[in-house]
Amino acid sequence: MTSSAAFSAAGLALAFGLFLHCVLRARAARAPPLSLRPSAGAPVDPSFILSGPLAARCGLRETADIDISRWGVLAARLCDHLGSEPSTRDERVHWYYLPVYTWLRALTDARAGEDAL
Image 1: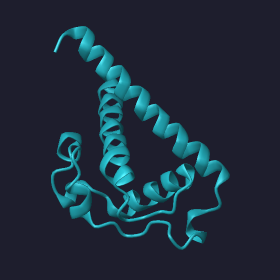
Image 2: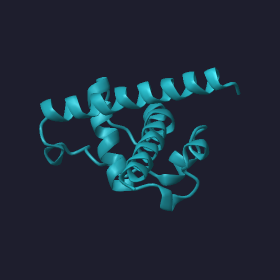
Image 3: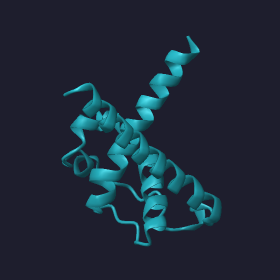
Image 4: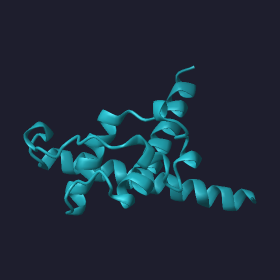
């Protein structure tokens, strides 16, 4: 991969991560508390998440890599913003959006740790 291709891929990943971050934050500010919604934080089967095409590439290789309670809350927020009912089998959310979000979140957390040194 050339440096310009790596830069554009990194830029695209960063833009997507920022988009998801902004979507989740903005929607959380306007949405009623998640604890009032019965579908919020619905348990998701980790094997369903791990069977997605991006899971391994995003660092999700085993059940221990996934915080299921946080995953359910994020999925409920994202589904709410997308205007769909939260579902534990929504491939778009559980196979694509959230794995990329968690991968980008891990990258930014690692970068913040490096900057602190």
